[in-house]
Image (cartoon, rainbow, N blue to C red):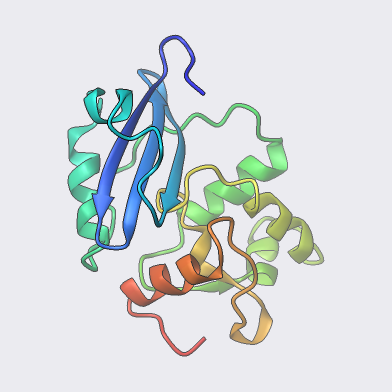
Length: 163
């Protein structure tokens, strides 16, 4: 879907592709894909990225380096609870994990682990809001919008194995 003023930008990485949807106000979504998107070869490959260092950082991430930049994200459409959970998730350091319960406790709702997980399921910008770093009690992976295989791979890229 292309809206006036919105652009898409395709980045090829070792595991597939990353598709960014953005405007001059910020990044709306980041999609992880295994195969080449059907729309590739069109506007996504011709669009100019407003944050050229972001492409370098995404490519670096797939070589084991953290994404350090704080890029503008479009948070409209998220509830206040989801925004709070996503902000707390952004603060989880590269190479570390926390549980859904710990995330809920950080948000001030100790019994809110399930609600924290539901908020993370709405995350449109994985990697930039690293929801893959949140795991279930006992080190189980839990869910991930891009699928469990992506979650395992992203954690392994950060040196986290054995979950």
